[in-house]
Structure formats: structure tokens, C-alpha cells
Image (cartoon, rainbow, N blue to C red):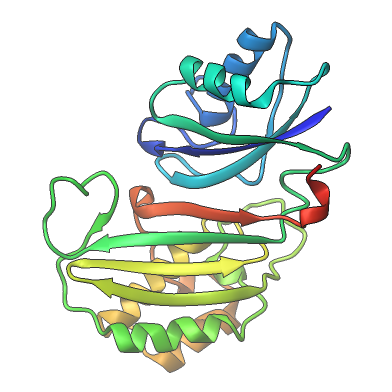
Amino acid sequence: MRYFIALSYNGKHYHGWQTQPNAVTVQQTIEEALSTLLRDKISILGAGRTDAGVHARLMYAHFDYTPELDVKVFIHQLNSFLPSAIAIKDIYPVIPDAHARFDAVKRSYTYWVVQQKDPFLQDYAYYLRADLDIATMNKAAAILLETKDFQCFSKSNTDVKTYICDVQEAHWQQDDSLLVFHITADRFLRNMVRAVVGTLIEVGLGRCSISQFKQILKSKDRRQAGVSVPAQGLYLTEVQYPKNIFL
């Protein structure tokens, strides 16, 4: 039987999602809890890979296990085994070939920028005390919806076959001293959102014009784009799947 896990996590103390040597990761922590509870070697595969320090309000992963689980009871048991920084929201039985990564049709992220010192957000937002031209930042963000190739925002030396992404939403929203960037696409490249945000901030600071922003996109050169903003402000907020994969 294949199951999808819906979960959230605080990424502050984790070296990203994916299991790796000599580092504590979210994937590893969940696999160890599952394996202990089910008394079997359980592996999970996530909807994507978040970097060290990145948070997830909603992430999905899948795993296989027989016999059938009492889902409500098992969610409680699994949450009891996991540290407080990881929470299991739900577990769904799915069709046998459902895939948490490849069946995802849409992913959404937010990035938090706080413009006033806030002790409660120091680990969960990027503190940037600067006057930003949000209207121009939103004009630049709208250009992303017309763009297909995002190589200029991709981490170098990745093994992707294409840099094509379908961005369906990209805009900034101001809430007092908190500035939040929303972006939704069918897929994202490694480091893409943090590089996009860093470049849009350059626009907001007046260091990069709209025409220069367009030229950066055309260049396909990561060196032309802005720096990647810190990880702690980034949140995976939603992953969407076709309804027909759920039983």
C-alpha cells in the first residue's frame, strides 16, 4: 500500500530535507520514526528538496507499507515519536504508482522580509531595514509570469535537464513591517526562489531597473542576477496533486 504524508516543519535546526551523511535532515528524522514504529526499514520520497534552514508549512512525501494502516491512530503515534519541529498533518492512501514528486502539478512558496527589528521573527524572516519601491518590485515580478527559462536563477552545477518553469503567481504583499513575496509554479529550480527574491530586492532598492531585470532573464547567467537571500525567510506553503491519485 502506498501512502502520502502531509507534514510541516520548522527548518531552523535541520540541514534541509534530503538525507545526507553527517547531517540531521527532515527526511532522515521521519524515516527513523517510521521505521521504529512499523518495525521495518521505511524510506520516504518528498515532493521536493528544501535547503538547510528553509521551512515548510505543507510538504508531502510518500512511502510504501503493508498491511493497511489505521491512519488516525498512526498519525498520533508518529507525531509522538517525532520532535516538536516536525508535525504530521495527515496520511492518505493513494494509488500504487502515485509519486510525491513527479505527480505534483503546482508548488507555492512565500518569502518573508521584515523591515523592523522583531525578536520573534529573527529566525523566520530576513531583516532588511531599507526603503523598497514595492510597486516597481511587483512590476518586475509580473514579468516572471511571461518568462519560461529561469536558468539565471538556478544554482550552478545542477543535474536538471531543463530550466523551463511555468510561473503562475508572483507578487509582493505588504503587512505593516512584514513584506511577503508569493510565488507559485509547476516546478522550481534549486535556489530559484531565493535568487528571484534577491534580484527583486535589487529592483526595490533602485539598483536594478525593469529593463535590466529583463536583460538578466535573457542572459541565462546566474552571475547577472542578485544574491540569494537567507534561507530562514523561505517557506514551502502548498503542493497540489490531481485528485484522482487519492483513494
